Image (cartoon, rainbow, N blue to C red; front, side):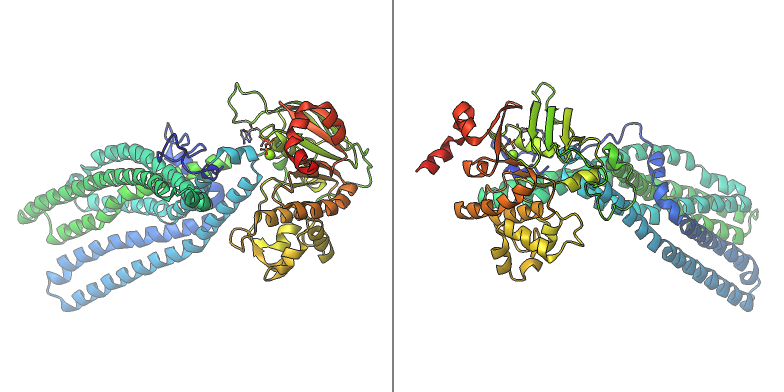
Length: 628
Ligand SMILES: Nc1ncnc2c1ncn2[C@@H]1O[C@H](COP(=O)(O)OP(=O)(O)OP(=O)(O)O)[C@@H](O)[C@H]1O
Ligand SMILES: [Mg+2]
């Protein structure tokens, strides 16, 4: 997923655009309707619909109250002012003040009504996205750039909350206000009202053109924010490599190029917005000017009262903001529609079949191998397993091409093969991090594809090549591997740490097992991390243990100590251990050799040394060391 983790920008493309994997640009802009996109938000909005509608209603009332002001003015001008009635003027002033204050209070109430529920909507959507991301298969995460996911979970969701709080209500409110306002205008003086209505037709046409163009630009901008997030994230994660290779300048250049691209898109958006805004501001202004001239002529001719003209013009001016705001409300709605699309692009990714049924909270105690129905202790079997990565080129041969392997119950099998031969891939198929393309993998005779995931994961523990620790204490990191981390005791933790020979260094940490490690905590050495990962794998006393080169980062002495302790654990389980060195191979009862996608030889270390040239070759470097 992280392109830069593999190194700084490649020499063949010096400082050009950084590699941004994943479907950064979604379908988005072809034939998409903003309204249809936004309607998909309904399930999230439903729970707070009462509050939202009340808020909209309050805002409509407040906005229409604003339209009462011109009517009071009309009464003031034609009545008390014309009659020089001081009391009447005071009364009019008091009325105006009351209406104004009421309007302000109602708008305040609206804001109070929506703030909390909408924060809840945003939180719910984010939680759903996170849950979905956690359940999506590894193949999905291989395909998508993490920055794209991150920006969807943050920037896009923020846009959506803003949309629900503001443009959604105000499109409704301002639309209603405009309709009511024009009604009032037409009733007061229909000829002048028609003059004001004239610009509506070109405005609607221009807005629809604007909408289409703006939504394309919005989509581009949001995708580019995702790309930028990816670069920032990778630069932070890969900071050692960037510094080590002195690539900070080129990395900064790559960042600048991307942010320049984003700047261009944002400027394009601003230009579009400025254009539509100019039109939206100018046309009504011209119409009001024309109405003013016409109205004044009518007043001069005595066909219209001065009060009506004042009321008419004040109403027209009061409608300016609702009309003018339509432009940026449409723009914000468009961005929200794009954000919705981006959100649902991830949410629509199908989950692996058997995770679908589990909607509720995860069962607290994953089913242990049921004692009621004893299963034959058949061990671990691969039967004609073929696997091809979903994103591999179609003409590439499968990574695994008919693997047959039987790890007997209680046995420890070492898996040996050249680098890139597919060992990690093979181990990832057992806990179904990837699904086998064809063939079967069975645990004690039961097909892993048919086992519920919870049960499968409780049967197997894994330690991967690259030990990952989370920002949590040593205890939490290790007990993550226990069947029920809450119940696992001090004893199990101590035993796991002892097997991994991690006791000594953990005790030397400032707060022992409570020390925070991982990204935000104290950094550990590669070998220390590897030992904690190993402790995590063995803490739950799993029925099956899969270790991918678990001791590669340890010095010879520590390795020997871990091996001695590991033997105890291996004696109790069925294990598949990927090994590169003879010392690790010697932990195993038998060895399987993986070559060109198949298991080409199985036997003890010594048998294979005698019978397989490839095996001899793979082991030879270390062999000489050992013989010395
Ligand atoms: N996510 C992926 N998508 C496509 N191809 C992949 C992916 N991961 C690995 N591969 C390819 O699959 C092949 C086997 O990789 P794998 O990691 O299983 O090798 P390995 O035997 O574990 O190697 P090593 O000893 O170096 O750890 C490699 O050619 C690799 O390029
Ligand atoms: Mg590997």
